[in-house]
Image (cartoon, rainbow, N blue to C red):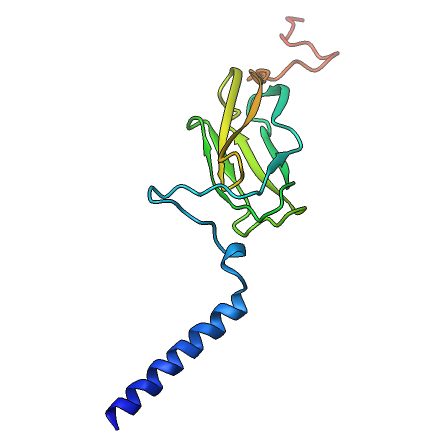
Length: 167
């Protein structure tokens, strides 16, 4: 009787696992395949960016120095953006897709530069995916100009003398 109970429990467990697997779909669309070092194994997905480099031109200090890089999977298999690693601390990458990007579908990665740093900049973000090219770089560049100084005094009103006269 105990053996029969164990068999029933095991069969129920296997049935539940099979149902979960069937509802989630094929494992090729839910997660990438990883090698022993934790790197994605390339698929036939191709990560094609609309532009590899964005030039902000001249920006005022403290202005909006963010850009959304749009891409499409032009390959024949799903791809995953695993990570988007900035080249330094003055750049951040955010909001890349956490789900598989199927062939023909699009996604985006938002990149932001710290516009309180003055001067020219040329930075990149390394995008890691399971596409045929595992690592791709997207670039931002431009120049941050000092914000014009605001006067810390009140200008005299026109027509009113600034110094009282001795009459």
